[in-house]
Length: 200
Image 1 (cartoon, rainbow, N blue to C red):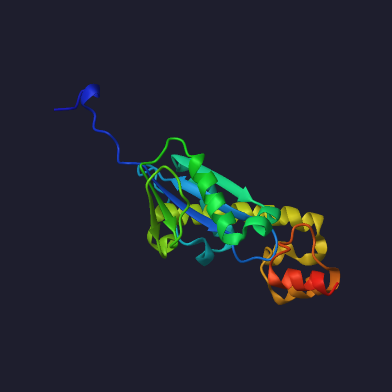
Image 2 (image 1 turned 45 degrees about the vertical axis):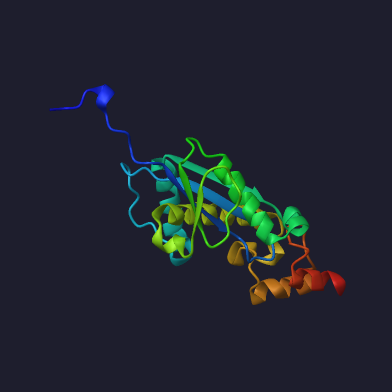
């Protein structure tokens, strides 16, 4: 016998996945994303963003944004990173992403072993970007969003190769730092950048 509308079963509990991109670079922001996936509209092929090609990440990011119940992004820039340190900046970005979620989830699962303090219950998951689909989706959203921001910085500072290394400390990036010095996009408190400033 079919259910009457008043007897319809509630959907599954809403669980958000949260991940960040950009803890290790010498330049650019740290970005966090939060995603609540819709089990009725699955996104095949979700995986840790670091294991995917840029083209595949972009495709999946579009599908996630189209099919998920909620997708939020928060960005914390270099000046704040320098002021409060990268760990606290990462937790701030995660907290801001979580607080933007609508509808509000019953549980938040965060990649890693550190989580922001929020009023929603939070569970940390080491290796969550490989084992949890919502966290994997968040890793893809955070990575693609940050990569887009780094392309914008490349347009402002074309000598540094941000379009290629996205601010990470590659040999080419370190060479550019030595040659041209830090930009306002660099994290002035990070050792390779600080050393350039000290010997400028």
